[in-house]
Length: 344
Ligand SMILES: C[S@@+](CC[C@H](N)C(=O)[O-])C[C@H]1O[C@@H](n2cnc3c(N)ncnc32)[C@H](O)[C@@H]1O
Image (tube, rainbow, N blue to C red; front, side, top):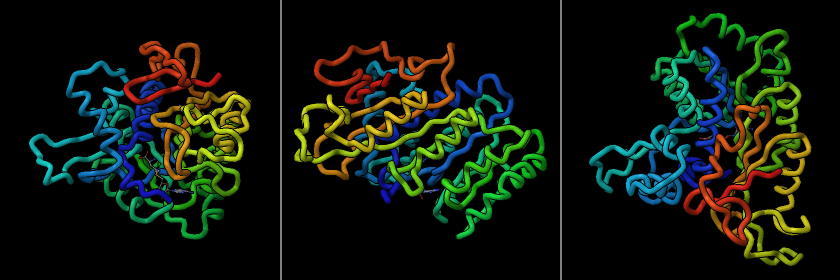
């Protein structure tokens, strides 16, 4: 499993978190209370090491901001929330440079908008679970911890009841954060599949580190969300494919899609096609060439379901009209090295 501590703030986050922020902001506009669910929450924040993946991601972006270059609005807004670089800190004290995880980013957007916050955060590992709990307690939220051990399937049978009870107990003015340590693939769907007449989440963020996790995930979870009409964002990485992949590989192309659909990352292509068939919107983002060593991430995909309406389109997130299309490369050069392609 990739280490989120060393990857925090990388290019994948630069494509993922502005989208999350923008969608949260839009969906919460009309609500006084907002219920956010995240399936892979990880740590609340990260101390960024001197050299790390963040230097090519948020670090690169933040230094460009200082140069006052023209960059799209969503990226500007995102830096202010996610990245904290204490003034006057020298290179010798890099641990003062921090990057917020996804759930705290959402929390702060909602807090600024004076919304009543409801969050259910799933995380498999003990250490980030504890840190999430400490973090949100320190932010003044009421917190509830659920550890499922090896009993995720059993806990799923009553987790929704526990959630409803926690909401009932919370005062109107309190923010409530429940952190569930356990396997979200098994646990999260019970929140909406067992909701009865009660209310469903306002946004579910699905953030696995790869496609084809056990039990056909994340596809199954997205299917369940689609059936319940729940807004969701799902981020998945795109990994390079070796140039000698059997078929002739168009190494110069940046997208995972080959013309015939027979070369490149066929798993990612199948996922994108499945999403399109279900009516979800899928956006591919690339910042590097797609041919190379398999463990190298060159881009990511964002699948969005039940998010858009006549008054809110992909263009509102990406502001796609701001840059021209580059010759020979798929999608728009959105900003600097980042290309995005909204797949139709
Ligand atoms: C890429 S990180 C998530 C980053 C975070 N969403 C963000 O954007 O700041 C993935 C996290 O998911 C956790 N994880 C992996 N499989 C999981 C599962 N089945 N259920 C819950 N958490 C899981 C890992 O322990 C890791 O902390």
